Length: 135
Image (cartoon, rainbow, N blue to C red; front, side, top):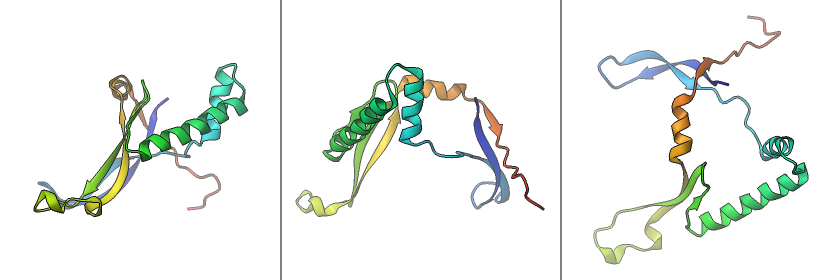
């Protein structure tokens, strides 16, 4: 298995040699949904698809609940979902309140073990030839 990429043209405006350049960009292909994940798990275990899907849906609900309460959710080998806020700076501590919060978001931080596997990734150019396309 390899991570696929495509070649794209970009206009670079900073650095020693600005101008038109070419770079590799990640090609994600089709996204994988919860049903596909449940199917994969069901096929590799003795747990049925409906049972796996029910557990994954319950996990979605549970993760959302904790994150929306401002708590980090740590998923062992995978990593952690950490809620964050972005707020406007104020001149004094008295002016800081909930109205100074601009937005709430969540970031995913891979675990050290999971992240170590990133270095083992191989890459190949995506084959984007479309059959039947006349040039």
